[in-house]
Structure formats: C-alpha cells, structure tokens
Image 1: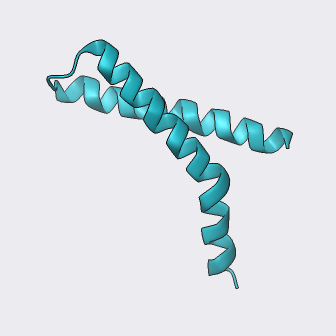
Image 2: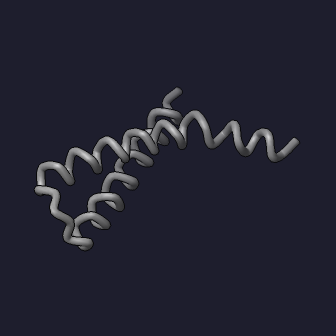
Amino acid sequence: MKKKAITFFVAAIIYTIIHYLIYFFIQTDYSQKEIVYMSIFFGVCMGVFELLVRPLIFKSLNK
C-alpha cells in the first residue's frame, strides 16, 4: 500500500509540473490561477491512471 501511495504522489507531481509548464509556455488566455487548478486536476487524474489503469493494461498485454 505504501508503494501505491508513493507511485500516486510522484506521478501526480510529475504530471502536474509538465502540464503547468506546457500551458505556461503556450501563453493561453487562461489566468495563472486557472492554469494551476487545471494542472492539479490533470496531475491527480493521471496519478489515478498510473495507479489503477496502467497495471491492468500491462497485465492484459503480458498474457
């Protein structure tokens, strides 16, 4: 369980930073606050994906 929690937080942080940097350099019409909220939401969603969905995909491909 500890490994899953670490995986979730690391994936969420990495995806949040990547998403934020992409939106920051694209220079969209979003405010700084909106970009931060969108990046956090994206990072959490991708953390859940890394934790729950990705192992299922690899398990089905290894059969």
